[in-house]
Length: 455
Image (cartoon, rainbow, N blue to C red):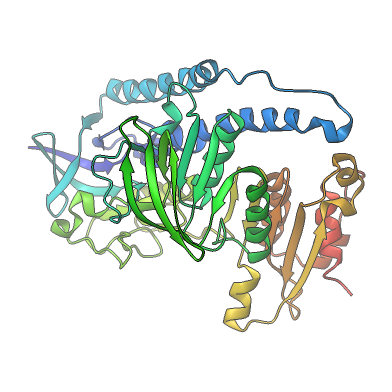
């Protein structure tokens, strides 16, 4: 049995815990996969590198509306995929090699499970620590019904490493993963069919955004909404078939590859945290206080294993706070994240911060709303955009911004100035009239929307 000052379970954002302030600690890092976690190896980074390729391909295909004759002869997928993972894989390997080279760090590869408070087993070894930090992330959720036993399906963990794009791709799910990967493979030439049990894609977004996004995807892909998958099978030719029930009856859809994108679940239960005295909530997330401490003494958590936002920028912020708290136990820093933005890198792109209009209505909170289409701006005219928009919500009493929801090109970039304004507690008046907006930049759409909130 090996004992350490600090045991970190998960080498994604958990790997960044080892700040110079903790350099004197004897540390064990336990990781069952590649260093860098989900974001680097099978999430944010590879998917966005592929999304950029998809954006370029789709912009080329639709250049005709701008008076440009252009076409895409081929998306050279092996070349694209090789470029993406040819960069990523060496980074993951180098990260592990670096940690192994440090005299104060021991790396354990394999699935960790608790066998007592701050005591874990991994690959036949037993590891204990004065302090344990859980940063083991989350994994794709596979619905229990229908039974997929015998079906050769993919998740976001595996599909980006396909050798070639499937001719026909079935996607089960309608959230951000389904949306982004439909864009990637659709642009690469796959015939995509999305099967979603909800009435709209991206149903967690503001309804105006969700409806606009669903309408856009219906023009591009086969989209079945309000659909329940009754059974799944495989034909003798290797096709995957799904029998789907919806309000108009039943139908069978088929494809060469099935992507299950039905959400993600935290990995706490897989670690057997109950043996350590670590509590999980009803959704399976590790319960923490405002400083990242779990219900077990000396055991902390950060990232997707305890935060339902499941965002890399959130996990990184939590890692910085927990690292500080480990180094300064008498000066704890709360995980005060402020307004948490997110984005969906699909086409159209989506970005949001703060509550949706529907959430404000349900809570009974008074609010003002303003919606402006991109076409209200000169740059929107140049783009010939007819569907994108920016929506902002404010408090009529304080004049503060409550939320913002953007659907259209560069949504994630346009949103950031509003995130900053909310974090700095600026009024709508200050954001809209207290600065100059570059004309005729696309950012004028944010200015136009904000001005719509003012008398």
